[in-house]
Amino acid sequence: MKFETLAIHAGQEPDPQTGAIAVPIYQTATYAQRAIGDNKGYEYSRTHNPTRKALEECLAALENGKYGMGFASGMAATSTTMALFSNGDHIICGDDVYGGTFRVFEKIFRPWGLDFTFVDTTILGEIEKAIKPTTRMIWLETPSNPLLKVTDLRATAALAKKHGVLLAVDNTFASPFFQRPLELGADIVVHSTTKFLGGHSDVVGGAIVTSDPKIFERLSFSQNAIGAVPGPFDCWIVLRGLKTLALRMRAHEANALAIAQHLAKHRRVKKILYPGLPSDQYHAVAKSQMSGFGALISFYLDGGEAQARKVCAATRVFALAESLGGVESLIEHPGLMTHASIPKEIREARGLGDSLIRLSIGIEHVDDLLADIDGALNSY
Ligand SMILES: *Cc1c(COP(=O)(O)O)cnc(C)c1O
Image 1 (spheres, protein in one colour):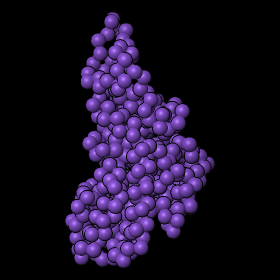
Image 2: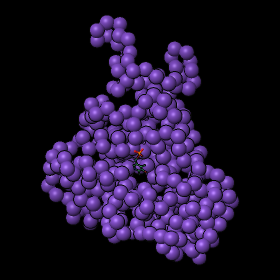
Image 3: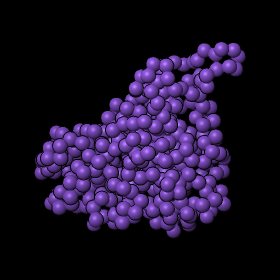
Image 4: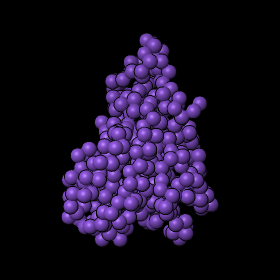
């Protein structure tokens, strides 16, 4: 079945008891057993819950994977993935990842004895140079956050296989509608379902998808043992969001392309970062592995922090907020907001300077978005 059909039907048979067309919210902690050990496949909701199961099956289908696992947040999914490793294991991580990912790796898992090297994963040689005998995994985001750098997933997966290390991809920015890393050779896909998958900025959630039964066995053990699982209502909200993912992603992208083209020739914009523009450094590789370019745009303003603060405060339709991937357009300053947890010297060395602004393009009318961003850029 095609993506749009799976998004509505995968894991979501009408309720066997009532015929309810929408998956019921099984708001229960436990399940009555007929006799000791004689249950209907459900014992306790940290381990299994029918609403969560529907979401997990739907997410697996959309990523073209075998197994899905739901989590309480994207960070819960990321942290649970790290339970695959132990003291002394080495992980190569993209140098332009979500600020919270960098923070949990550096502040929680490094003190526990995991070793991390941060590299520019868009350069294959940089990854290869970082591989050590103790390397167990390559972790990356593509397109990356907030610089929209694109890593060649097929080439990176081949390199990972050659060295016997896992490849995990945080696919939050693209969503499975535009990019399916498992089809390109990745072992693990991670999501913040808070973003495009939920799609309405009304829930926090996360997910892991894999097709490897051994990885699934270990991660579903950790999902239950650690217990950072989503509640039934949150699963239901994400499931509802998924039904319109295809429609929304097409609308997000059409708006994003129009705005990127406009910003590319705006006098106040020094440089625009959007892989959907043919002039973008990463356009060719993005085109080879994505069916669309998504809705995140970053740009360097012709100005400094004071001007960037003015622009961020001046929009009326774009809300000034962290997060991304909802139907509403958002504007933010990565250096002062989403990526503020990265030390300033590291941030600046990586291109997250004072004039960098990130947009998450929503699905409002494009004319209103263009007028709004234009007005804000011309406000100083
Ligand atoms: C938001 C985000 C996360 C973290 O997800 P939460 O749901 O906020 O915990 C991880 N990766 C990326 C790319 C994100 O945008």
